[in-house]
Length: 146
Image 1 (cartoon, rainbow, N blue to C red):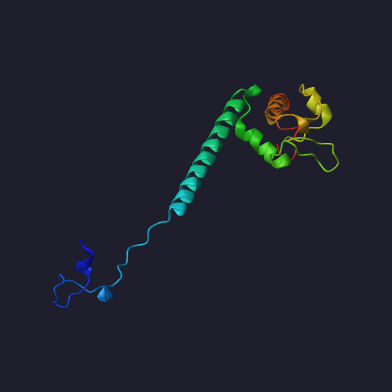
Image 2 (tube, rainbow, N blue to C red):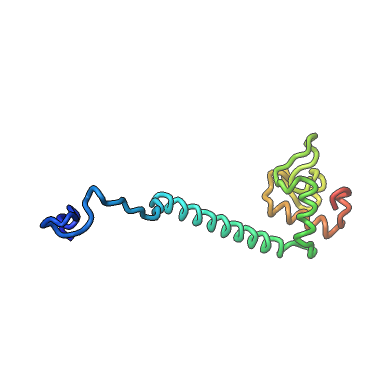
């Protein structure tokens, strides 16, 4: 539409319509800023990645526990570890006697084939050694948590 169409609506030679001074501003619904949309997409993608990583970790744990000796269940070992150390593979008792996720002492650790410091061993190694111990002795090595 030509600019003159917006000029005057007073019956002059100009085409009819509202005068520029009489025009009201149009209110448009607010548009989402591109940066806000981008941030939202990044947030959603990050959430999805975290969920996928957690699912992968759960799959790895199930696979690791599937190979445990003696048919020890995942829930049994998780329960013992949660009670003994809060599930922390690097936990060490206040006097230093008990170490790792299952709070092994050095003698017990060595009796199930462990070498070195139980708290320095990988979590998978600690799980394996705890399952061996449980399959041999039941819950008696963990009198409070077993």
